[in-house]
Amino acid sequence: MHFTLATVLLQAAAGPAGGGMTPIFLMVGMFVVMYFFMIRPQAKKAKEQKKFADSMNVGEQVVTTAGIHGRINKSNDDGTLQIEISRSTFMTIERSAVSMEMTAAYRKKADAAAGVTTTTATVAK
Image (cartoon, rainbow, N blue to C red; front, side, top):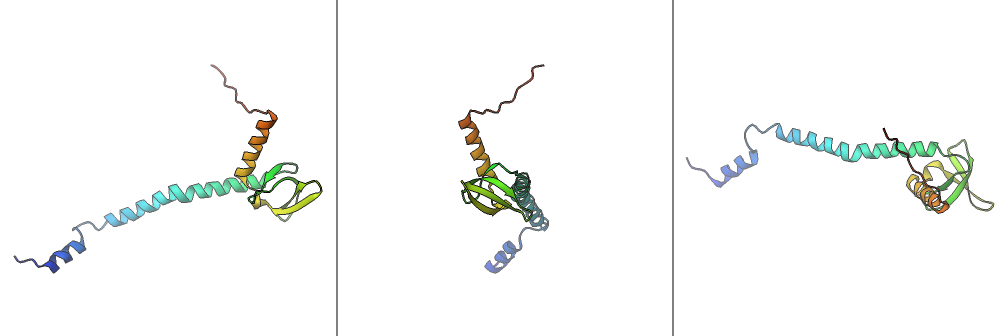
């Protein structure tokens, strides 16, 4: 039997015999990994951000995504907040412009400066 370079290359390009399902399983596996490591965490974080934005009340200190610190003065019906950034200086912003991470960090720092500690008590059995 005489093999030429062309026949060897054609056989190599065709791949192994009986391996038709392997690429499909590989693609499905890649989509599953992408879902659990990328899509699901982003959806969870977006859900937490929406919950945080809906739970803000008048009088709370907030930090916007632009880094502006202020206190919520008024919650408007159109989904905006009026914040007081300094004495008698007000600004209207969207609820979604309030950063959940920066506000939580600011509140934690303010509580630490005020001497407020949050501890959990453990109950012995």
